Image (cartoon, rainbow, N blue to C red; front, side):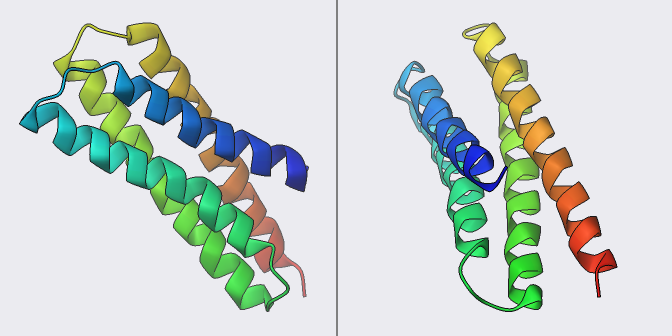
Length: 116
């Protein structure tokens, strides 16, 4: 599962970048695209970092960052959904993916916290 989610979070970041490359270059779009690219790539980077040989507290800390960044990604995807009619299907797909990753991470945090 670890490797599957590593690959899935990397693909999510890559797909968000590809989505942003389809929007016009403007001050407004650039602001939201930059934010989406940053938070979506942080999802995978922090998930990957969580698996380094560290403490349980470090693992949970990194997963909490993943949780936060997945939620932020959803926020910016929701904004795109409201401000543009372009790429509606892709925005919806990415929002669903972010939500699924978020659910997995929240469940993982609960599981790790419940273990002694």
